[in-house]
Image (cartoon, rainbow, N blue to C red):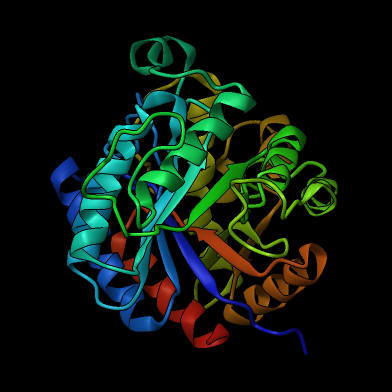
Length: 333
């Protein structure tokens, strides 16, 4: 039997068509409280901008709220898109949160903008090139260290000092996998929306892994892999709930800005060609009854050799998402 590795949740704070933004954020916090009780290991909040269906723009504020409403689960970013931020301000924000919630905060970092090109131009603060990314991570480690000083300049973050927040590298490309390995950091691969060549990317990370880099925090490769999950009492019900996700992704592909839409019958989802494209883009999924999902998660664990999985679950009805989390915990933990 496949070992059941830790499960984590990636939260994007979906906004359903019948919700206000405040209601969506509150539903997200209620879900945080639930998965904390159910035994999930981590809850990570993504960073997205200019997306009408998602409220995960101010990532550090959401992390602070969720950490305050939970007791055991680690809370962090999946991720902070580093080019959008001053690294010192990231150290100050996360250092402040970690002072309030010691040994429970993770910092996942990415190089993508988390938005469209036009919006990116409004928020970009630093370069996204690999060397600048590595230098910023090295400074962050200095600001989180017991000395509390950046490595490139002797400036302190004050609040970050001594927090020693673990840093992860997020990636969806072969280049991102290589960077994570060369930095000697744990790697979270975005297989939930970029499934192509994922085994080669993980192999690239492992083969390029270095413990000699000044940024190295671990002594061997460590992988977290993303997967879309919806669990319901039957396969048919889960597949219908899943259509909310497909509609959202089709909207993103066409540039249509809408909140999350109610489920529809799967055959009503656009043309056959559109459905085929969506299935290709989101082939890394476990959608179905508890038995269907258990088998798929075990297969995916074997395929990736991952040390942890991080799941993404959208549902128009917050109660359906809670049901999915409860069924998932029951079948896995």
